[in-house]
Amino acid sequence: MLDQLVIFGGTGDLTARLLLPALVHLCADGELPDSLRILGFGQQSWDRQRFRDHAGKALATHAADLGGAHAWLLERLDYPSADVTDADAIAHAVAGIDGPLAAYPALPPALFAPTPSAIRHVGMPDG
Image 1 (cartoon, rainbow, N blue to C red):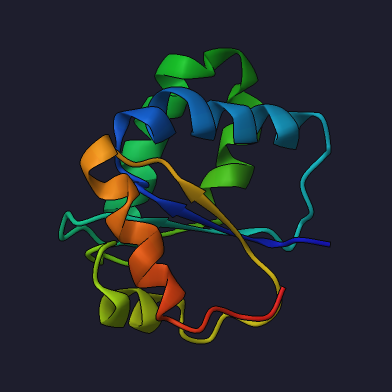
Image 2: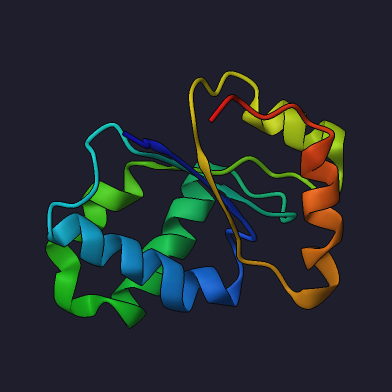
């Protein structure tokens, strides 16, 4: 079972308006494993709590009807501040991840091509 999700562009509008609400809907339906860990990459120099506060505000706006599932999802969020086009920064941020992960590129068009290019040089976990 997949229990690691990496969101490249974790602080962006696509994540706030669509991806986080979709995840909280899956949570409310019991479709996400308790072991789920979500890394929301971004270039802002935020810490985990600031990212969780940002995500909480997004969920309050875009998934208010599922408020009971918000806390479950927010507890699983982490935030490594990293340039998503820098292979060394990505490697440092994903260090320690074991097993397969899903990567979601919630990126603006200008970053969409350079990010997979950087990821290719990282040596992501098998799977």
